[in-house]
Length: 303
Image 1 (cartoon, rainbow, N blue to C red):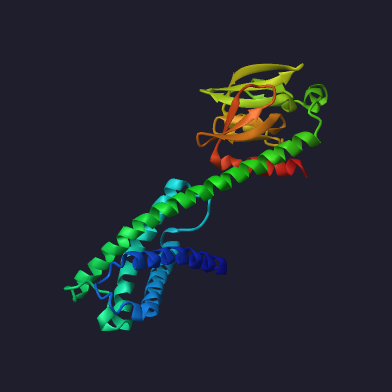
Image 2: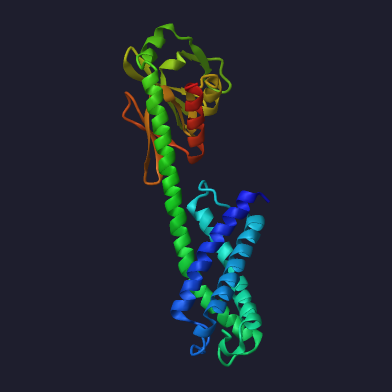
């Protein structure tokens, strides 16, 4: 296992065990022997911190190998919540068992943190589980909210980075070249229909976007500084293959191809991503998996 994974697991284990230990001493849920409790204060602190830390660490370690729990902010909130639930389902019995073992082995009998009247293992273990479960609910909610905050911050930073790249790219290139290239650029042909010999010929530099509409592809392009549209029977896959040699033209959604030369900004609305275009008052949707393609294409264009 990589060292950075162990380091992250250790940090993740320290946080809940610290909160759990503080909660134990505030509410003192274990036992009634509080008269002699302060005499063994540091022993109790050490035992609870050790038990909680080992329980959390083992839970994260097992979860990492069992179902791929990791710390990647690219995970969806729902997916990460399910994995966190699995971690806590492991953590509750492990921590409860370790608390039981540590308290019974290392603490003096008079301050042994067990449930009064239940000296046997199963009743005491169930009692420990019920106590740990109550606090783990709080920590689970906190973890989900913290991950949601981290993910939102990561996505915001990613959008800002892409917008900075777009701004730099549009500043570096003469935007009017897109219009001038209509006359001097090379034209390409796109096959119209899968079993047809007809072809559509146009200059790819004038292309703004292509939208899939049923069994047709609608091309929006710039001609003599006017926006024009044309529809023809073809799949978006066929159009994309015909335009594959042009770095600035990429598929940003299963239903859209866009020319980055005409993209102004990337924005997020209601947890969905859209591209704002020059000349056209239309928001082009962007799939979450395609954001990286846009960033890679912009990097290639700026080299």
